[in-house]
View 1 (tube, one colour):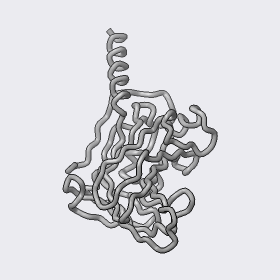
View 2: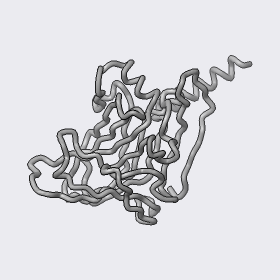
View 3: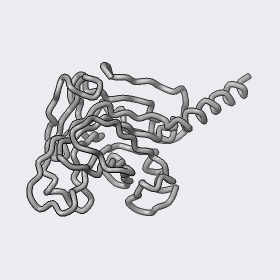
View 4: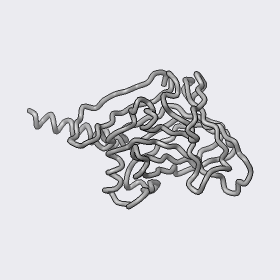
Length: 220
């Protein structure tokens, strides 16, 4: 994608946090507050992403990963990542999918996960992928934010109420990579990121459309 996109759905919600609208961070104008897992600035690349456009790169040693993986990218409220376009209530507008364009050069398949947290970094939940990500090629990865997704792990009480509380006050997005089994020597890897998108999943779009139609009929 060659430009940043920001679109709004005309819905309102009577809760404390503002509803988040669909958005895509394309990094066309820079890293825009996104950081490496080490909290340092990523490398900015003006061309070469999946669509030929700009992207950012994080470099990390996977041998330093802990039992829950190694954080490789951070889009956080306290650093105003993407102007806080990812911060707020995801339930209000049916936002339940985060997609990214991603590449790494580890030379072997890697497990990749996304941690979704409040601005205080807890409570949170993590979303894994069903399959590891191959090395050396751009791919589009999607993380479904759904309590019934078997790849979701909640940090804390595993209840719908706990999940919804996080979804209504999201502040931080953190991408991580697993440490390969048996790795005991340094493995320095470049991780590339582009087109971080938040959208309603296709089923949610249909429900939102029905909701809008019903509201229109009520107003009539």
